[in-house]
Length: 355
Image (tube, rainbow, N blue to C red; front, top):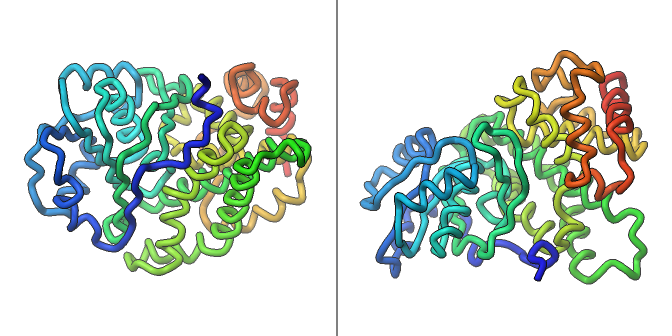
């Protein structure tokens, strides 16, 4: 059995709408033993909006999104029916691993619009020192994902923009993976994944800038709601439908490589992925597409150069940890080209830096 090749569309239930968190008690009904996993900032944001006490044991993750922390939390929690995750991507991924350890259901309340972690059964696993370790595949998807668009207007702008960058990669990565795949080898679900990724790209290029403006004005709009559901829900559908054909490729491999530069540790996941899109496009020689994206990147605030990710030394020696990791056999750039080399990735980075 290879769970990574299975069609896994996403959460068992997905509920989205304005002020939907006011119905939280009804969603929790039926569960007698509940434990909450959250973070310090996530907890504060939730309490400020919800204004009601949750009378359940509450546990703080350590910020790492590591399997070690998940095991530690599982030992503290003990037997439970439901893990309620309240937070951003690392909180949620920690809660997924903890729920897996405890064989418990998972309910997710995202406090940020920044990635598809609230929706998918996939986790980004890091080492305790916060360097990237591997992608993990949980046996269960979240039982329920609750997306309150009114609450999520408190998302910091940079996190929202990072979510847009991470989600935009869905199209470029699936296109890069499948462009040389013969049509008769594309299954029904791979084709659906490609179609959903294209819809994501078109929606973001049209709605993302108005959605950012809605966030800045603290006013929900149809564009804001569409982008919210795209980042959290639709992004997960692409990989869920197309499995390995619709998940990570060159853009995420660059992100993973950049995690080995300590100066990037404070940079958001989606910002590094957005830069990785450009590197993948440079490698595949889609330079016209890079030119088309430049205006969008500038308007949204996505990085066009490494210096915007706090990386100022672009010499090959300085970038060796990045390019060696991104080109490694267990990374996802080889989904675009199984013969990719570190030198080729470095040349692609130089193309981006000097274009």
